[in-house]
Structure formats: structure tokens, C-alpha cells
Amino acid sequence: MALIVKKSKIPNAGKGLFTTKAIAKGEKVIEYRGEIIEWKAYAQRVKDNKDGYLFFLSRNHCIDAWSTPQYKARYANDAIGFTRVKGMRNNSQYEVEGKKAYIVTTRALKAGEEIYVDYTREYWVKLRYNVRLEAAKKKEKEEAAVRKKKKAEARARKAEAKKRIADLRKKKRIEKRKKNLAKKKKK
Image (cartoon, rainbow, N blue to C red; front, side, top):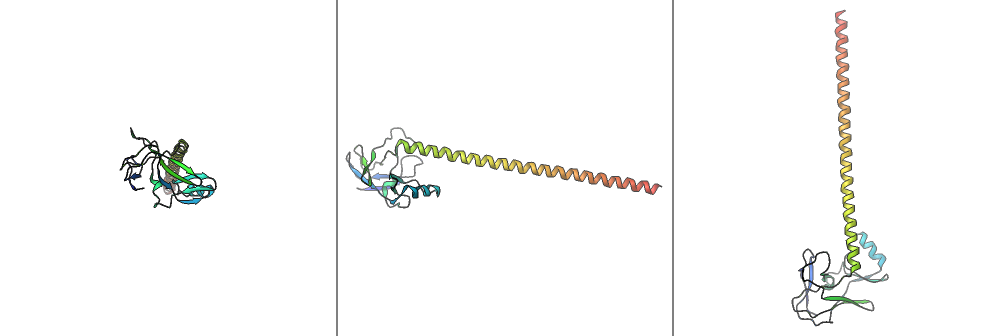
């Protein structure tokens, strides 16, 4: 299959997968390839922020294309993801055969078309949840920084007030000594 990777037509989606030749409906476009790992290994990659191209087949067999940019299937985007463009629809779907996954067209494609494949509703629900979770963590971190700054400012004001009080007390002691000295001199 003649496929190329270039800027996606979906705004902010990064790269996309395009065909350079017409493809008939129901035809296998490309195999989804990558490193074969277990789900446990993928969970660690998520913690390391090295995820985003996983195809889950079973807990013992996942295809991770994160570190394999030479495999083009990872560049196929979902037309009904975060950013939707009017009139843009998925034109392909994933099909699993044993321990392999393929992108298969759901309609005939013209040369030059971008290949859009359904990532599934579950994928977008989890991704939206993760985005909200990250936003909440970021907000909490920002609020904690504001609280910390306010506490530091309050400590600084308190220290400044203590210093002013100490300075006033010192000034009063000096004035009192001067008065006492003046009284002693008069005697």
C-alpha cells in the first residue's frame, strides 16, 4: 500500500496517515506494528510519560508503537476525537486477526485522502478523564503555589511587623535612657 505521513487535516492532531493511491472498501490498509509488550510494562511506560500508541490485544500481548516511528499505522488519527471538523468522518476501522491488528477501510478511499480510524468510545472516555485529572492536578499545584506564596508573604509581613515593634521598643529604651541621663545631669 502506498502510504505517506504528513500534517493531519485535523487541527492540532500532529501528523496523519495518507494514501497516495485509491483503496477499495474492505481492504487492509496497513498492519499496526510496534514492540510487543505486556500490559504491566505499558503501565510503567504511562508513569514514565512514554505512551500514546498502544494497541491492546490482551494483558500479555500489547502492540506499543511509541518507539517505532517507522511503522506508519500509528499516525492514523480518529476523526471523532477531541477536535472535530464538520463533515470529517472515520473511513477505516481496526480489525484483529489472532495477535495482529490491521487498519481496514469502511468505504472506498481516493488517492490523497487521510486515513481516519475509530479509536473507540472507551479510548476517548479514558483520555478525557486523564485530561481532566491532569488539569485538576495542575490546578491543585497552582493553588498550592499560591498558598505557599501567601504564607511566605504573611511570614514576611509578620517578620517586618516584629522588626518595627523591636525598633520602636529600642527607640523607646534609648529615649528613656536619654531622659534618665538628663535627670542625672540635672541633679
